[in-house]
Image 1 (spheres, rainbow, N blue to C red):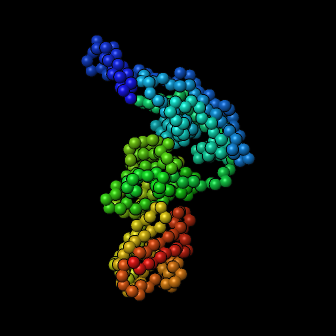
Image 2 (cartoon, one colour; image 1 turned 90 degrees about the horizontal axis):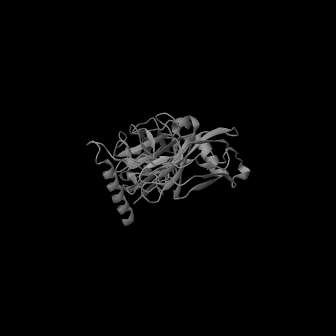
Image 3 (cartoon, one colour; image 1 turned 90 degrees about the vertical axis):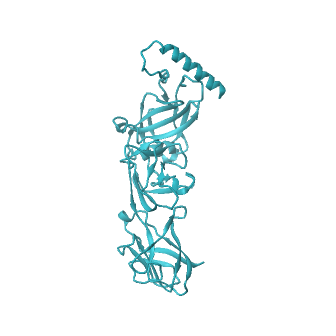
Length: 360
């Protein structure tokens, strides 16, 4: 590190001497840096198949970039659709794969390249074009020229994936345990989160359980910008349904909270007691004092979507059922409610949900 600092001081001194005769007010910058030559791809036309999923499909190699300071250079490869590499949103939908420090090549298996191609939206079993470029990062980011390859992807065995939402609601921003938002249709992801008191509402959106590619806020809080350091922010404390559209690079949230209601609950029949969402077990939970009486479940403090049980033994709640779980002994209870509401607007609410009511 001392060597790098000395070189920075020397470079700064030279820049000062070179500009001392210039007019006051001019800014000095580090000298321009660029890729010394084009990068290479092993093939420009690739047909992918599930039978060759473990074979090498593509090798990308590039020349070393020399920055003014002698320090490690981190390289990454970006893939994007040809129509998405110009204009104000250029390369914002790109798939970015970090290669490493001073590494000058990267190979891709059929399965890896197929996932990149299908995630970006290339049609199955039809030749389509992908734009490829190299990113070099040290004191700044620079990019190579762009090369186009033609890829024919195959149908994936697993169609749907997920993205991840590390944030302050966790307390530690741990992407390894962050909320997973499942894909409910091509490029559209949805999930639920509760922001507890004393936890912040800010977060990022990551394409994997790592920090190789993530999205932060762009022009507005609801715009996705690739590798942006600006955090997204939910409205504040409470529970929300979060929807992310990677096709349009937008995200949104709505208030979304399951709660308990009934004459055995603190709010009686008029006001739901809200539950919190445990994103790791995908379960709504609450510990609450109950009195003798009935307990039902409803969404957003409203009777439009509600569940009731037929008895106290099955621990199954049914959509729009008039029944309720009866509390025969007052006390503190832990209540859980688990429902498969991955895409309620598209698929409707399920006929059944599971719950527990356990005296503490």
